[in-house]
Length: 195
Image (cartoon, rainbow, N blue to C red; front, side, top):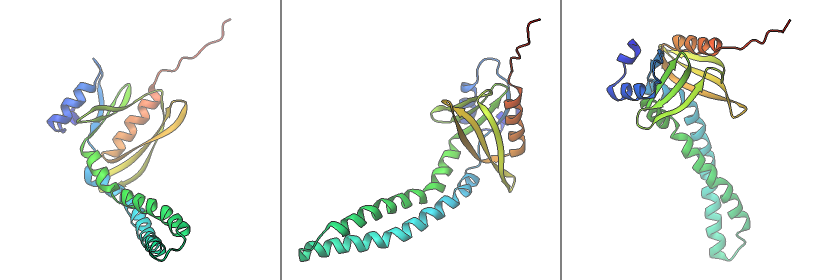
């Protein structure tokens, strides 16, 4: 329960609202926004590289298309290349915003682990995702830096295997242990042979 007391008032309200009656809290935290943003720096780098490489190509193709229009030449090749380069440039700019998006998402998120499920809660919108103990297949700690870490939780999603990344977690080893215990402690029905 002490983890609940460390949350902000709005996060506490959202957490209590998401709990079922008589559902005990095993672990609860809000991810650190700065650590979540740091975790997305590699995506920022990839987006910057895509943008830097595609922007001159798009500019040259649009310039060639403008020249073709002015001189009455063929527009097919310049427009074809610009139709490839412009979406790549836009996608690169989208990837550049990844650290900011991760920062905002972490500020609005609460990670709650009970004895029955793992719940990802949006402070503004309520429960975003619920993973029951049966659906959790495993958890892997990806990194620990400055006391914060990243967990990858593998789980079943509509018959397939999916992965949920929890970045910027404080006490990441406690969270990993709680998720492991949750995935291993779910009840298993053993059918014994009839004699």
